[in-house]
Length: 301
Image (tube, rainbow, N blue to C red; front, side):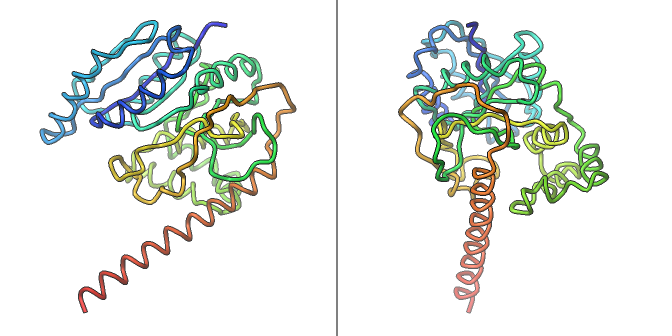
C-alpha cells in the first residue's frame, strides 16, 4: 500500500506544534511517510516573532521519509492555506492526510487513515476519513458513517476533494432551494446554515463549513473511528473560534481501531447521540454566557 502524504498547516504556536509532531512521530508509519508543512505568514508585525520561532523549529524535524516545507511570504489565513495546500497535493498525489498544528494524535492514527483511504478508495459514497470522534458513547467497535466530514485530522482523495465548492453563496442557495436547512442542521441541533451564511457574507473565514455543505449536497458520508484517534490542544483560547469548545475534548484511543468492510449507511444511533451532544453543548455555552454577563453586572453594581 502506498502511503498518503501528510499535510500539516502551521502558524505561530510552537508549543502546540511540538506536541502535534511528538504524537505523530509515535506512529510506526511515520518513517515511510512524506510530510508537507505549510507555514502561513504573519498577519502583522506582532505575530512575526512567533512565526519565525516556528519556522526555525521546522528545519529540525526528523523521522519522516521526507519533509517538504512551504513558507508563505504573506498571511493567507487558515482557510485559503488549507484549500490551496490540499488542492495542490491531491492533484499531484491523488490522496492526502491533513493535520493542523494543535492536534494530538494516537499512535494508530496513520494506520487508520491509510487503511481507510485504501479500503474506501473506490467507494463513491465516502468523501473522507476522519480521525476524531465526539465524546459520546458508542456500542460497536470499528468504523462509523456520518454525514459531517470533520476537520480535526482527516483524509481524502482527489475524487473527494473535487466536490469542494468554495462559493458559500452557491451552497447556501442550493440548500434553501431544496429546503434542506433542518436536515443540514441535524434537526436543528446546531445551526450550520447560519455559519455558512456568515461565511458567505465574509463575517467568518471557514473552509470546513463549505466542505460539509459540499459533501451534504452531494449525498456523501465520512468514515469515523468508534474511538477518537485525535484530540485538539488548541481549545485553550490560543487559536481562532475555540473559546467555547472545551466540551469537544476527548480521550485518545491508545489501541488500534479496526477497519473492515460493512454496509455504507449513516449510523442512526450515533446520529442521534451527536444531535444530543450538540444540543447539550449549546446549552452549556448559553449557560456560561449568562454567568459571565451576571458576573459583569454584579461587579458593576
